[in-house]
Length: 134
Image 1 (spheres, rainbow, N blue to C red):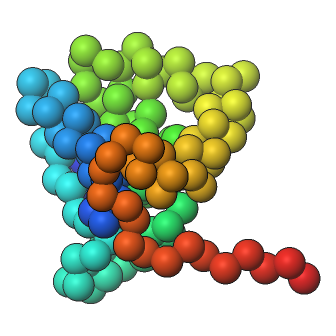
Image 2: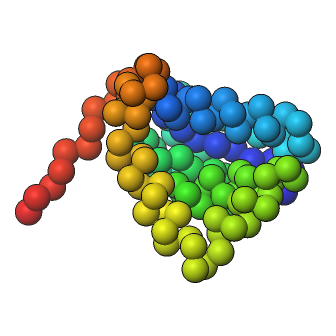
């Protein structure tokens, strides 16, 4: 894989720091990584296959074949595309571990505002999704 687009919440300090790290790692590999914040007003028109309502739940990737991955699968896709980190992406994508990695990702994503605050980063400005308790 030589081209990958990563969609993320640029208003979240933890998310932005994570994407900065991934961007630095991609720069030292052969990965052509584009990063698009969910806040980009032109994004939905340019990338209609992306779920723009996913902004407060996690990252998404779009590869050169048009395949969209979300959350921990998107992170594993990024890591597998970088030679120095492909081993970790492969482990994250193992069927036996995938469910646990995904659950861990969801816990972090749900608490990213708190994590950002604990780390002294910019807190997320996207309002939390209301809980439907029907």
